[in-house]
Length: 135
Image (cartoon, rainbow, N blue to C red; front, top):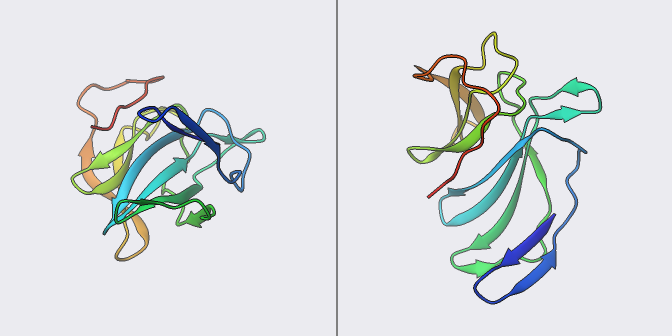
């Protein structure tokens, strides 16, 4: 994992993920005043995974350089090639594959440390192989 500060033209190697994975999703999100990078789902070996790892990168405006990846509760659905972003103020997973149930949106609730379904589904059915941008 490489941290890049495009404004200052700096790069720094960050700790390695606990699980090797591919076809996963990643985003940044906040819990209180700490900014985290989250990496979720994808394949671990030949199996689809629902595991999620987070890395603190900024606390109250200061870069964290000695953090380590922590596993949080796994998503309810194993997913790959899906969207991971922020829904309101919570980390959210949606879409992707496998197609049978991945259209259900689930969010990570840090207060109870668990993923919950929102009751919402993606508006366009069958949307696969996409990425998200967090603004």
